[in-house]
Image (cartoon, rainbow, N blue to C red; front, top):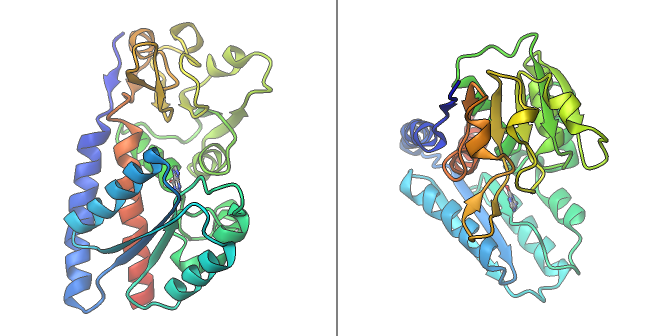
Amino acid sequence: MTAQIIDGTALSHQIRSQVAREAAALTAQGAQPGLAVILVGEDPASAVYVRNKVKACREHGLHSVLEQYPADMAEADLLARIAALNADPAIHGILVQMPLPKHLDPHKVIEAIATEKDVDGFSVQSAGELMSGLPGLRPATPFGCMKLIESTGVSLKGKHAVVIGRSNTVGKPMALLLLQANATVTICHSGTPDLAVHTRQADIVVAAVGRRNTLTADMVKPGAIVIDVGINRNEQGKLCGDVDFASVKEVAGHLTPVPGGVGPMTIAMLLVNTLEAARAAAA
Ligand code: GUN
């Protein structure tokens, strides 16, 4: 079997176009969606990510502001900026790029963002809403993974999904979203003794550990849907995921590539969340 490659770039473009149409309608009502992105420090990868987020907003008719601060910014000053953005009616989403410099407490910073503007879905309130099955803003990466899975047309009901990774930003919310879609969910992690025992039973595998070749062909049930969240580099410096793409594509039914799979969906879902936040504010 050769897997169907799930084209995250194409799906993200469809979603972005829909966002642009809906953003234009809100703008016409005087409620243009607005996103504020805060970057503290000079981490080059973070600088690229935030630039792409702001650029995506501009290209799709959303208002966006990028606030960049030096790495030694005082925590009180950052909290004051967040408070000002919480009170700004032109801003519906606030994203503080992670990781933060060590002297800044990420929990304190995330909790300072008004829940209705928490477009990352990282706050305790947003996480609790997801846990409780209440409406709310969902973390963009797992939200994007759900859209990629949905795009296969395969129903999750009664299926066994295995999530590899237990981060607050991907693994845990991913498991909850799959559960909400009526899958039977197993969460594996670095302390799981025999990963393959679990993944071989899975109809859906989401790999989110940040280590290449975590999932190889012998670990995959024929026909499974495999979603690769990893962003790593191989020995040649080439971008690769957590999945051994070349071998797994011979076994899986559907597979996301890296790049061009989950990555483009993350920004698309951030736009969706900003739109949702703006819509809720206008209601
Ligand atoms: N750093 C890497 N990914 C993310 C993300 O999705 N949101 C934030 N705030 N920081 C990140």
